[in-house]
Image (cartoon, rainbow, N blue to C red; front, side):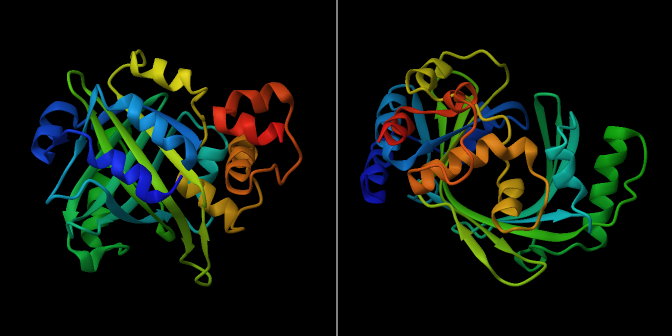
Amino acid sequence: MTTKTYHDVLQSFAAITLNQLNAQASLMNRIESKYLIHEQELWDLLKELQQDFQILEIGGAKVFTYDNIYMDTKELDFYHAHNNGDLDRIKMRTRHYIESGLSYFEFKQKKGSVMRKFRYDIDIAQHGVLDTTAYEFMNDVYRSLYNENFAALVFPSLRTGYQRCTLVHKSTAEKITIDFNVSASQIREGSETFNFNNLVIVEFKAETKDSPTKEIFAKYGMLASKACSKYCLGNYFLGNVQQWDRFQPTIDVIKTIMYSELQVSKPPKKQLKKFQTTQLKKIIKK
């Protein structure tokens, strides 16, 4: 399956504007589920979703390029909070939308299964920069959430890039983002970039856990990956961390997708089965 092929499917979706999306499914407070598939499965999945979903279109474009710079403490405390499975954790980043030129500073809180996102507009020159305004924003949000000041020192930590399309349900507040051509790049030491070849990350966002859309995912054997942070996975694949227990099942599946074979010790069959999609089952049987 070539990139052009599934791009053609995307072009055949009915379009929705950004204003319509924000009115129908902005989902700043939402429940998220992430799924990993091989890009060869994307054609069939898109055809299945086409009946019930529209695609975000801005200026005639339906696929957009994202450039993210994540912030963390010197000791990568935000990474370790995720790896440790903390039920209340935060992330911070600046995000630049290449095609539109828009940029934002974003503060995200994950508490249980609910994600809350806070952001403000920044100039492109402030992308990846922590200034007084950014610290004031971080402190204001943190204090509103935890009733205390944000005392940590944070610095630019890792860069991620990818292309994304956004699908919005025609009648409910549901949104699906599909990310491909994913990469992670060093910021603190060196300039190495890791490309996640063949990997597609599908993220389902809704106000509740229950949705008929998940039946489509189940049809393709797609089960939610509980630990699939691009920031955290980028740190692993770039060799920045020594602990990644929480991410090990996801890492195994990503390596299966990228290399068509497991490159690490094979996990128990029960655990591996949980993450297998139709395409992966075919690969593993070979």
